[in-house]
Image 1 (cartoon, rainbow, N blue to C red):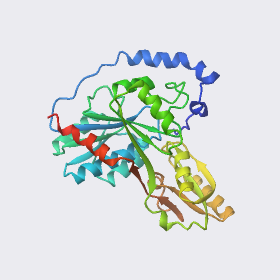
Image 2 (cartoon, rainbow, N blue to C red):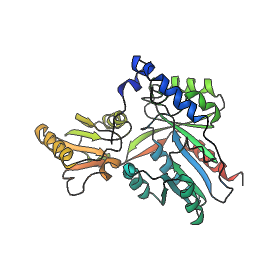
Image 3 (cartoon, one colour):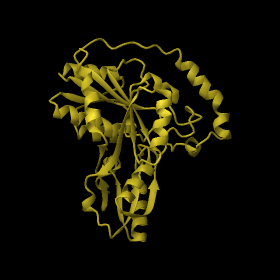
Image 4 (tube, rainbow, N blue to C red):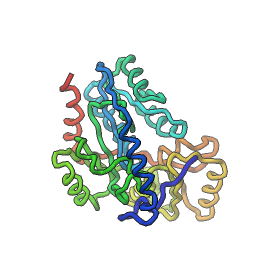
Length: 314
């Protein structure tokens, strides 16, 4: 089942419904206290976890790919690891198109597969809250647009864990526009003055193939639809209609036909994300095109230095 995140999650302050759900929120926190944490057996494979607090749309997969590219340039044999979810085959296909991917219902099993296959570094797309693994390096990803929403944890808000838990992490990655950047950085440093903040923004790689004189219908089923639309408009594409679906949405023939009809009625082109394109029935894609994008890192040398530190402790 695909569900859209509740709109009240992204309010600047909690509303009545958020407060009504607080007993459930506290119960989940209480249960979490009793989860056991065990360390991975020491092995040759190093682990880098790219995770988040805010649920969905924070740029985890894109940062994972960027880290893999950096390690590849340094001749370090790296792979991707992802817990298997049948609803997330789009992300799995995207990672597979960029490198070797190991999946399993247990992340530790996928890490061991990577070790047995001779990989030096396993990059985990998600898994920050997996207490069975002690990572060598972790990144907490946020999208500047939504930041922490109303600041509460699930189900009262969009956070997997309290923002105050940043005090136990060393690296944060901020992704998106710079509008709220100073305010967000100030908030982060107030919690952890020693944390490293890395900054990036999505940049389209194939924007030249799109005619800026034409009108476009844009649709997506990703964690942060607003960021996708903002990027398209930043690069001067005229988006006259945009349609948002739930994250990891499985498109039906009805959905595609409806999108096609709206496009015909508006006499416009159709554009979506690379992740969404992987989820479309290739027999039905017609005139649907996708934007291929990558993360542009503001200070890539700083990120490279942080990543390469995993080899300092053997």
